[in-house]
Length: 196
Image (cartoon, rainbow, N blue to C red; front, side, top):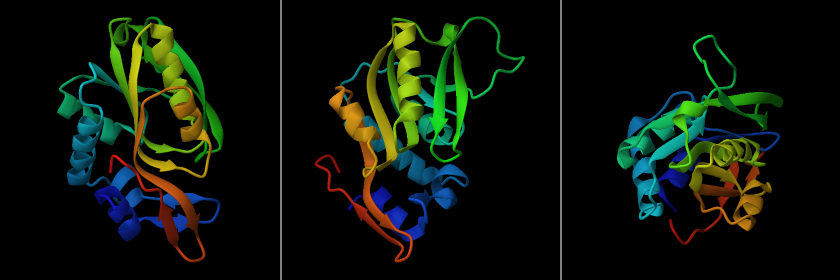
């Protein structure tokens, strides 16, 4: 069992409807030491890749992505969920459905931050059905940049997102893969991983 799985067992809360709450350390209150551990692990798992940008989606992926960008010593970009008057010029746009919030957002990235010369590592906190990742992949591909990898903190392995992305040939690394959860018993079953 790795450090993130241990922390999920210690402080995660399983709710009905296959919801795993990790807000006390990952996506509301953030344990910065844990973020740095996760970043170091992503650096190890994606070593040798020519990554020069890290991309995530607001808001929950930002903390992890900042730590990851720091260890790779590259800029971090986050896709915004709404257009504001601060954003000008041409933008890449993707539709993203949220499993957690049960809605659809248009996410945007300014075209000045992604180009065909970029080699992008996409980072996010959760992977369920893969909607957010597919939206970010479509933005990277529209820019002509290369998706070098997908780094996820927690993957819900009982949903199809990870399986489909791996079948498409993407290098996907999830630090913890939950294969089963039970709200009644508060139990969580993790998938064994070779990289862990």
